[in-house]
Amino acid sequence: MRLIIVSGRSGSGKSTALDVLEDNGYYCIDNLPAGLLPELAERALIHTELAQPLVAVSIDARNLPSHLSRFPELLEEVRGRHIQCDVLYLDADEETLLKRFSETRRRHPLSSANRSLAEAIQDETNLLGPIADLADLKVNTTNLNLYQLRDTIKLRLLNQPEPGTAFLVESFGFKRGMPVDADLVFDVRCLPNPYWKPELRAQSGLDQPVAEYLAAQPDVEEMFQDISSYLLKWLPRFAASNRAYVTIAIGCTGGHHRSVYLTERLGQVLQKTLKNVQVRHRDLS
Image 1: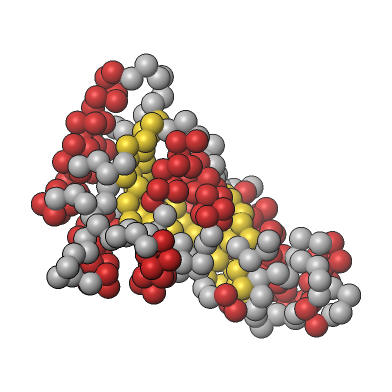
Image 2: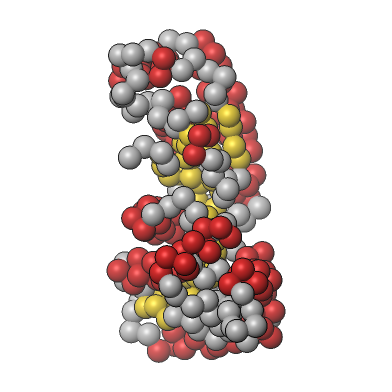
């Protein structure tokens, strides 16, 4: 059995996450009382007609505060039944959450005549702290549209052919901000930039002319060797510490050339020695 617990602040994309999981064969329950989590897992194991049941539940701030504070022991009880359980926590910055509620004119579940929207969001942060602290995977949706969020959930949660730590090597551009959910960040803006070659500007690190240009630069090769040596040495130790997800982010200025080229090469090297290595280019679209 695989159980996915989806949580996060209101407006961060929990409904979208449940929709994606439901579309991929999960039996989904929205707003499950946290105290029922062990019982749900037990009943799913006993009564399901599926050989490997897939269940996803959403637990949010509409729960009783006493249930949310007990989340760590409830999660431990579920995992004590030898159930594969992943906790996905979605979030966004407060300005984005305020904007989303303003645009949709939805009412925040914790807001009231005596509590402003900003105060409700802050209270929600405190209530969900026990879940956020134990999340296996955190996804910040501040800069993700609906389709990007769906793709991210599919890649990180559903594209795992084998158990163990899932490694994501991701390129990005600093001009759009660093990935806030990255575990390791490497800045490659010091390398020669194909952007300043007019014939290469419109292409990306996936294109052969850009790859050939960067491969011919000694600094690029030296950077690649240093980063790959570091990752090959230390990523297995991340896996040995029972980390479910590790994100390695490679950043250049725009996220189109240098970071894309190095991310592709690093992904190929890591896939030879590690399981569950995924590659993503955040700013290529």
